[in-house]
Amino acid sequence: MPRPDKFEETIESFTNYKERLDAHFVANSISDVKKSACLLSALGAKVYGTLRSLTAPALPSTKSYEELCAILTSHFFSKPLEIKGRFRFHKKNQDSSESVPNFITTIKRLSEHCNFGANLNTALRDRFVCGLKDVNIRKRLLQKQNLTFDTATNLALSMETAQHDAVEMQGEALTSHSQSAHSVSGLKQKNKVPSKIFPLVHHVSRLIMAEKGSNAIFGRDWLSQVKIHWEGLHQQIHKVGLDAESNTATLKEKFKDLFSDGIGKVKSVSASLEVNSDAKPKFFKARAVPFAIKPKVGKALKDLERQGILNKVSHSDWATPIVPVLKKSGDVRVCGDFKVTFNPVLKAEHYTLPRLNDMMASLDQGKKFSKIDLRQAYFQLPLTDKSKTLPLLTLAKDCMSLKD
Image (tube, rainbow, N blue to C red; front, side, top):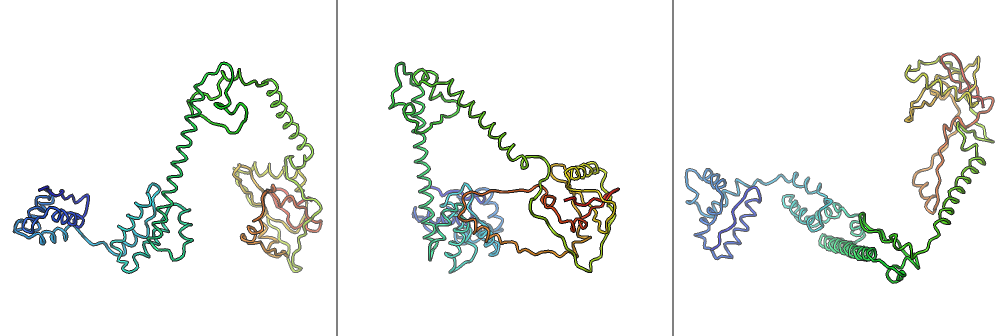
C-alpha cells in the first residue's frame, strides 16, 4: 500500500491536506481502523511533536482518526476575519505576468472566507472585470448585457488565447522573413542579380532590417551589379541641404519681427484701464530685493527700458512695488503687485472661460493644430495714454511706467 504524502504546514493548510488524505483512503480501500495509523505515519517529526503536546498526557495513537483531525484542524486553522478577507478580495488585481486562468483561481481562493453567500457569483464577476489588466478585454466585457461570471471568464479566456495565437503567428512570420534575409546575405552572385532572390533590385517594395551583428543583406559584392550614380546622388543630397538653408534664411528675413530677440508688440489694439470714480490713488514705496537676484532684476529692467516697454517718470499718484519672479531658466521676470494698488478698484470686464468639454467638442473634427506661446504677453499689449499712469512700478531709485 503506498504511503500518503507527508503533511507540510508551511506548504498547505491541514484542511486541504485532509481532503487529499481522505481521497487517498478511498483510492486504496483503507479501513477506518487503519486511518489513524496512516495519518500519524504521514506527519513529520515537528508536526507529530506538536500533536503529542496537544493530546498529552494521552498518546496520539489512543485517539481516533476523527479526533486527531479535529485537534490538528483546530490548531493549524484559524478562520480569517470576514472584513479582512473581503479587503484582500476587492484589492486583488491581475498582475502584469499573471494569466487569466491564474487570476480566476486567485480571486476564487480569496473569496472562500468573504461569506458572500448568494452574491458570490456577482462579487466574482465584478472583481474579475474590474481587476483585468487588459483594457480591450475589459471594454468587450462591459459591452455585454446581463453579464455573468461564467460568461465573463469564458470570453476573457478566448480573447487571451486569440491574442497569444496572433502574437505567435506574427513571430513565426518574422522569423521566416529573417531566415530568408540571412540566406540572401550569404549568396555571392558573379554575373547578375536574380530578381526572384532579391526583389529590391527591380522594385523597392519593402526594407528588411537584419539583426545587429548579422551579415549585410546588400553587401559590396552586389554594388557591381546594381549601378548607382553615386556622384549625382551626393550632389542631389548636397543641393537639398543648401535649398533648406536658403529657405530658412529667406523665412527669417521675411518675418524678422517674429524671429528677433526681445518682446513683441500687439498692433492695432490698445488696452484701456478704468477705475471707480471714488477710487483714491495709492503710492507704495519700493520693496527690498534679495541681494542674490538684484543683478538679474537690474538687467531685466534695463532690457525692458531698452525695448521701449518701460519709461522713467518723475512723478505719479499711483505706484506699485515690483515682484521679481525667478524662472526655471535662471532669469528673472519682473511683475507688479497690483493687488495692493488699483486691482481692487478696477472696472474689470468679465469673460466666461469656455469649459474643457466644449473646447474638446469644437476640436473634434480637427486634423491640424497649432500652439502659440507669447513671450511675456502682458508687456506686448500697449495701453492708452490715459491708462499709462496706473500700472506704474516703484524701484529703489526711480519710478517707471509703461511707455506704450
